[in-house]
Length: 420
Image (cartoon, rainbow, N blue to C red; front, side):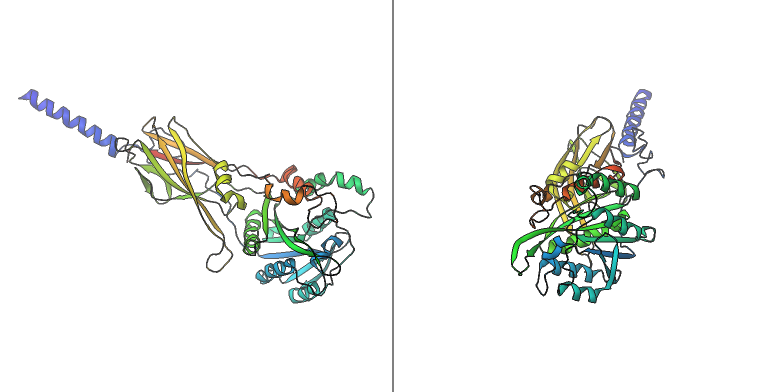
């Protein structure tokens, strides 16, 4: 009788141990430092990420050199005039005036929006001036108060033309270095947004339907991202956006929320921990990640670029692979130009090596990819060609050099456990 009781007691003990191992005990069985034993996040975990936010003031600058004349023809409609006026009008509450940049690159006259509209429409800005981009940037920086949340936006074709300067050919050869030095010294975030417009000759005839020009946004990363999204949205809605590229950003860590997983469940709505993975039911645990992309340049929100940017690995020997990816993109929220862009990615974990696993993931952004600009950069050998962006490829190289590169995104982590 005693032997039977001992056997029963032993069986109950084994069952109890099994019950504890499947429904209790540590969730973070591997003791990974990114999680507490119960699967929650330690206070020391870095969760800071860049989020677009509206600037306190926008200072618009418009270049009026000779190469811009085809956009400004007197009493003639161009897409440039339509788009620029739409953008200026949308931000009128925080951008009451527009400043013209003079021939030497210094700040010239400033006009209220309605007066600027009249001058733009009647051809008052048709000019024979040359374009001195480095001097223009210095002038803009000297008048920008980023510590107060201000942003500057330069509207220009960005064609560098140092006519009248000493040794202009030498200056052209040093262009990228000069831009890099200016931006590296100031250490602000910048975004170059490309657009196209029809371009008119002196008689008002269209010489090309797609002449490139740019909006160059300067300021703190949060405000620059906000303006990049708003300006790009209006241009895209009008089917005249080329692309946007940027530098000088510190994005922090990538962020995501989660949909309903398969063969596990989320510990709580705010913690990236998934418990109850049951290999006996299915050898794969599928997590639905909703990766937020509105802080980054727009091409990341496309399948090919996202799949190249998305990096994920396991830290303790299990296998992981990226499954189906879909996108949910909205550029207008509550009738405001507020972008939300989400990649909905299925992440599959299988062949679990231990009772828990930690996934490390991040985004490697295509910072220096300007493929969509290439039709306007390739073959750009003359500033008089309205179909090309003469010298702008050198300007872009200057953006990517020196002290203004984007900081690498820090990794983020997900815990998966068989325990619960």
